[in-house]
Amino acid sequence: MKTYDAHKTATDVRQASPRKMNLRVLIFSMVGIIVLFAILYGAYAWMQPAG
Image 1: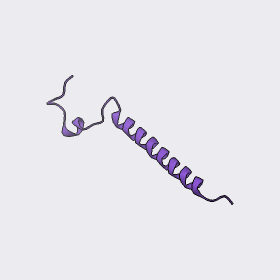
Image 2 (image 1 turned 180 degrees about the vertical axis):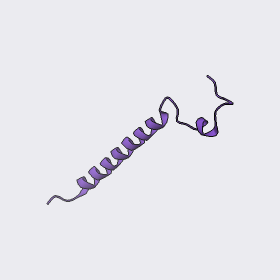
Image 3 (image 1 turned 135 degrees about the vertical axis):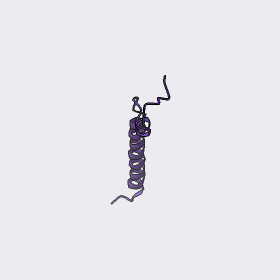
Image 4 (image 1 turned 45 degrees about the vertical axis):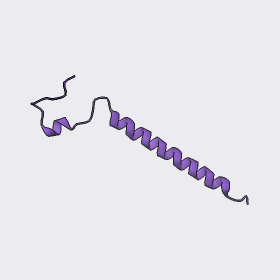
């Protein structure tokens, strides 16, 4: 795998990876946050008195 290319500009070098790792991190982070808020909401609703 070639890691250096003298013909690429600084902008070209900083482009996203072809394996879409940034997208995976974003999706897993969003799912984790949604699950965390669902757990917190469920715990809050469960602690409320009936009535």
